[in-house]
Image (cartoon, rainbow, N blue to C red; front, side, top):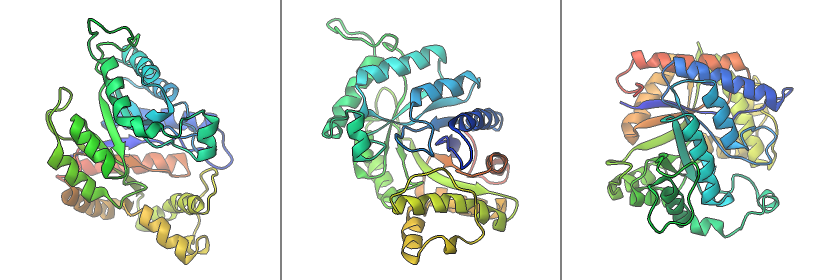
Length: 334
């Protein structure tokens, strides 16, 4: 059985503000908790007007404060942007405030472009030290050692669970070597998914945190009462990925009737390839597609992104997905 979780990029839609996006995030998180989703993650992005989760630790605290039991975390923190000690302190604080509910997913990409990385004073070689930084961060959450002069306060002894995120074989190999759960970003970079999962499972070494591998796949899901309605809603995501190909960043756009009037044939090919792990349609349509995906990949958990323009339609999509747990032997919450 696989767990269902939520990936919320806290989208800012055209005509609205970041404050509106946060209000929608609070509402979706509360609904997701009632509907039985396993965890609720937000991700670190910078200099993107359509994504409001840049201050990721702050947003996690906001979500946790307005929910009571769903796990809340980062999917992820781009660790090379930060010192491991500061992240340990931030997530040690979150774990102290909301014990047993905090996840810390770690990525090594900057979460932005080169110019923004420079504005953040990011060391362009910092990604080369990612494995060492993960180990350092992990040590801050462990028990205080006799000769340890630097500790995270709070953080020491809290054992905040770490995840490795990735979209290539590198993250799979690192997660396996460290014995950590692994989340693959197939919701936007699906090409290496099957190969990465195979490497992760074959090379996994049990650790104090995880006795066995746990693989999560990111997917886009847009559910509606009919296939036609879902296809219409999905066009907002298709526009966003087309704009990414064009080198543009902006707010999440309203859906359109004819996506083929928006993108060129080449943009269609590239965006559709990036969105290959997207499941769009009525409940019957999505159930069949998701069943096949889970069976073929063998993942333990689905991290579901649904960047739908209209908030009520977004809520309805997650509600319909939760209802599928009663109609299939595969898509079931843990």
